[in-house]
Image (cartoon, rainbow, N blue to C red; front, side, top):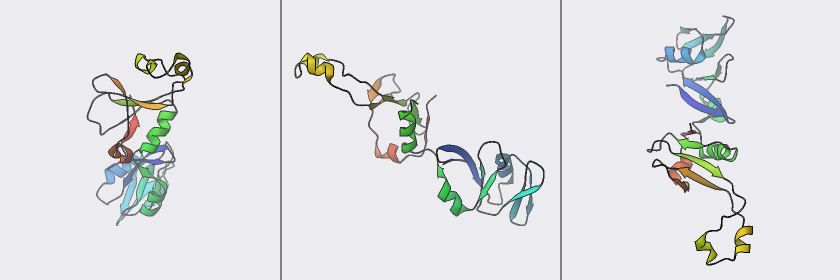
Length: 170
């Protein structure tokens, strides 16, 4: 199975060679190859024999160059699977909207809200004078567009914080 993986916020795709998934490995690698015993020999773009893929090793595609091959330990050291909440926060802070593949509602997404001045509200006027309200800063917050087309403040659950299925909202 081809998986999404990330190396320093750079999206990549990878597949683990298990001796039964030749077509999938070659499709991801974008090349041809020859199986010799348990190993797969990938041909490079210039049609020379290149990378040797042993069982349990990963073939990684980063852009348009020749595929990378890494053993399981090096792959685990250099890549993470999916996209973490940390990635989602970075995307929010740079102006992108994000969502989770695992959310049930259609069209739900998050957005980073930055407002410099609190808007006077009739309820707040009971407790603060107008001068206080006009100079009261509002801190950034995360808002959610809900499945029923509302926009509400959002708090991260433990499930969301630990999820690896974050993506940019369409």
